[in-house]
Image (cartoon, rainbow, N blue to C red; front, side):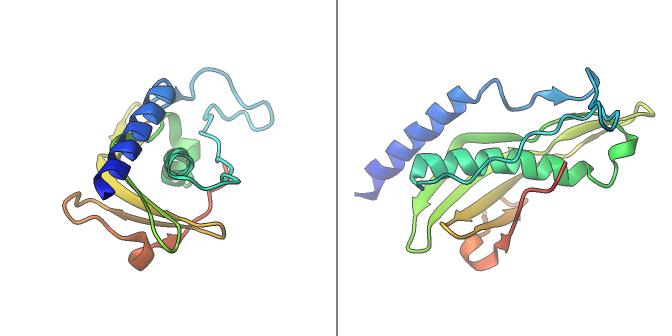
Length: 165
């Protein structure tokens, strides 16, 4: 009985991936500036939590949140040194979405953002697996570099908010 639900959620994940295919991995910065600060880094926006939580809305929210969260977090202390950044890229093709008593657990792989410093050097962030518990009241995040031993946000999750730009 659980397998059809997982298959439907996999189909939803693929549909979300196709809808957002042009959105992930985009390079930001370098073209145009923020008029107020002169900043050339245009970071991904922080998404609003969905009004109604479903498997599809939880997956869409978690992936958009992760792209914004990790990209903003990784560069916030180095902003003046960075010339351009490529957003984190979420891999939803193997995403797992599961409804629990607490809320929706969403797990997926991520390719970290990469960035180029003004001095010409660059950083490739690698990849990892992250999981979210999304409820009506909070968002918990748990990350790991071991895809064979994924973290459970219900047990090891930390409450998160999207970092300011």
